[in-house]
Each structure stands twice: as C-alpha cells, then as structure tokens.
Image (cartoon, rainbow, N blue to C red):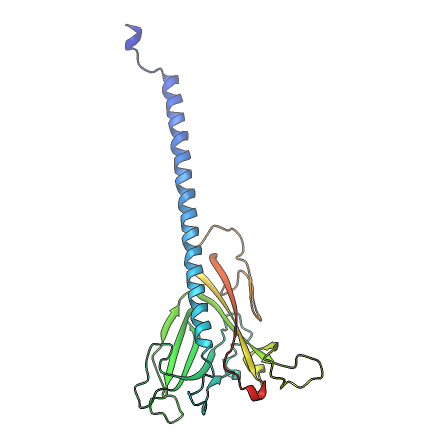
Amino acid sequence: MNIKQRGFSLVELMVALLLGTIIIGAATQLFLTNQRSFQLQQNMSEVQETGRFAVEILSRELRMAGLTRPDGTESGGLIAAAAFEGGAGAMANDQLRFRFFGTTDCQGDTYTGAGDDTLIENRYSVVNGNLICTGLIDQDSNGAVDADATSVTLVSNVSSFQVLYGVDREMVAGAGAEDGIPFAGRYLRANQVAVTDQVVSVRIGLLVRAAQDSNEQAGTPRGFTVLDKVLAGGAAPLDTQAVRRLFVRTIKLRNYRWDSV
C-alpha cells in the first residue's frame, strides 16, 4: 500500500481525541465562568438600581415632611410613635410616617377638593419583603386624613428597613437647646422620641437582595448591621446566599418648628 494512502494510527487517533477533549473542556469552563460572571454582574446591577431608587424616593418624599400651607397657618410633620419601631427581632422592620400639605401622595393619588392643597400622610413599611407606600389624603379638608386600603410597592426583595430620628440638642454643653441651629446631636428609635423632641433629620437603612439566590460564596452567608439592627448570617432573613447591599442615607428635614430648634 502506498504510504500516502495510510490512515491515522491508533496512537495518533487517541492523541487527537485527547487534545479535542481538552479544548472542549477548556471552552466549556470558559463559557461557564463567563455565564457566572454575567449573572453576578446582573444581580449586582439589580440590587444597585433597586436600592438607589428606593433611597431617592424616600429622600425626596421626606423633605416634604412638615410642609405648611402657603400662609403658614397649618403644618404636618414626622410621626414618631412607639408602634412604628419594629423591635429587636431579626425579621422586624420599622415604619416611617409623616405629614405635609400638598396635592399628591406617594401613590400618585391627588387632592380633588376645594382649595389649593390639603393634609397628606405618607406611610412606608415592609410587607412580605416589599417596601410599600400608603398615601392618605384629607379630601374633605377637615383636618383628618381619609382611610386608604390600597398601597403601592416601591421595591421588592427588601431584607431589612430601619429608621432612626435625629433629635436636636444644644451645640454647646450647658446651653439651651433653642439656639436656632438645627443639630442632630443624637439618633433615636421611634419609641425613644419624646413629644418635646424636635426631629431635624431622619436616617434610613435599607438592606436589599437580588431576586435570585447565589451559590458563588460557600459557607455561611455574611451578616449585616442595619443602623441599630444586627443581622446574623445564616439566620433569617440572611439564611440564603444572595447578592445583597446595604444603603444608608441621612436626610435633613427642611421644615422645622423654628420656635423649638
């Protein structure tokens, strides 16, 4: 037989199969690595967008707290009741409520009565992992907001929502608190704020997770401290591996009772 018509030997065929297997394995590993990297980046982007959106909405709305009528005759303000403090439980979340005079609540509902504006109360809380808002409007202009059984979901996959209230105190030890300078000398929980305290800022902590679980990290999920709340990794709500990020924002209130600051 002519040597040019001979096929591969068994050794040559085995070497070719081995090389092919190595190349296919390397390509598969590269594909899986890129896929995991893409999923991780997607989860991080989702968490970033979710958290920033929620914090920006809360910041914008909170600056309305205490807004008076144009003539300054009436005002709203923060409602720091003890019932709005979630408590020490890991799954407990705080509530945030405040009032102002305007025309539109956080749900997008508008005032339809007589006059330019009315009393509005916005309520923020977490239900089944969703940060929701319920807006109440005084449609009758009688000084009492109407009940509203509906609400809107701002963001989902919220692991923790905590609120602290910055209370004004004197800038100099021994001086009176009514010095005309709004200074949050201490931050308190809702159940620690007294009726006589003037709240000049609000600090919110929001822990958001990606919608999909992640197995990129082995072992116990990491813990987080959300303002005054310490959440242990491996226990609810941090009992599964997932991409999470903590957002903290301090919002200075614009509408003070200047006679008490």
